Image (cartoon, rainbow over all chains, first blue to last red; front, side, top):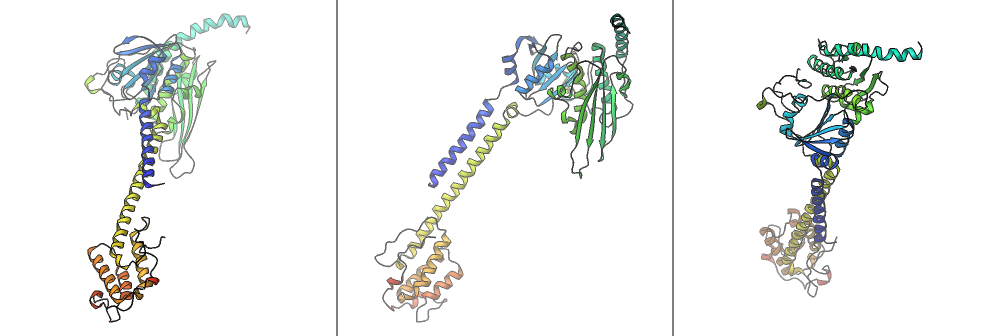
Length: 139
Length: 352
């Protein structure tokens, strides 16, 4: 096999790697698109898209986290908060099923500040009803 | 007590006890007075308050008891608290319904051969209480207590208990309070932005793609370097042949050298060739070859070492005593006819 043939084969290998790389990027799904495809959209709330799930909050959170792995998650008595690169997903417990809210990072941090404030960002005091500053805040 | 009496008394007791729990829960839990091995006093108090809010809604007391054994430099002891007291789990265990998270954590020193370990458990009097598996499915518990952020892991796990209880239909869900806002909105913003979601989703494919690209690039660079070396060898071999063209016996084809041979090998082959046959050349041919080699060496066409030149001069020296110091061409005189029979077949060096 000539050197030129081997060079062509090597170039093909690189091309294959680039195709795999593009596939890994393009084939990924955002949490918003997954949720909109699997749960019923019921409206918006302070900029957050709201969906309804017939399953419990724990099952719903597990379903979403299994499909789109979050960077971080926060469990609270009221629900589970999932953090993605540019989205926050809140899965809140309801009497029947659960409520899913999808917010962008900036508005989500303010919207869920009572829970995620001090955990996923800076803590800048709180209006009445604050639930804590996040572990380590008092260290 | 008869079954009928129990049926009658049960609702009465429940009505009597639930308000007692509710009133206890409505009172703020006693704050933590000192730091535990996992949580600071402030974190424990905040956690107890959050659990207290859940207890007020659900009528279920919550607590935690974490036994820490650290053979290194960290603190050991028991970190405990409950929705009724941030210092103790005992008040919660007196409730009609309670769920207590327990764990035994062992941190070993860096020099130890064994690893850190944690075992979780649930102490509850509920009929279908949360289990460590439920917590793990939710992404909490597990090995989180072994990480640096063990305080966050513990808080996350304990706070998940009321959520699991409500998800199992054992109590009402705790409504989220989304009215809290930062006192200074300008200073409140998310930090430590996580990496792209697609990397977490397609980690295997991403790593595979990088490996394939790396292999391909290696092959390209490797083959390019070999191709460049081949060209260099071929060029050098042609230069050697050009210089020694006169040494090629008549009637023998003068082929370019094989590209696989290193320049040093080509030259060494020619030096050996001269050692074997150079002595049989006529004086004028010896002088001509030597002169050509000297000139090629000077101009850099052929890379000859001092040792190789010495060997060449030794065999191409003329009888008149042309020495290493004297240019061979100057003393060259015809001695005998060309010794074609003693010359290796062709000007081409033998292949390796």
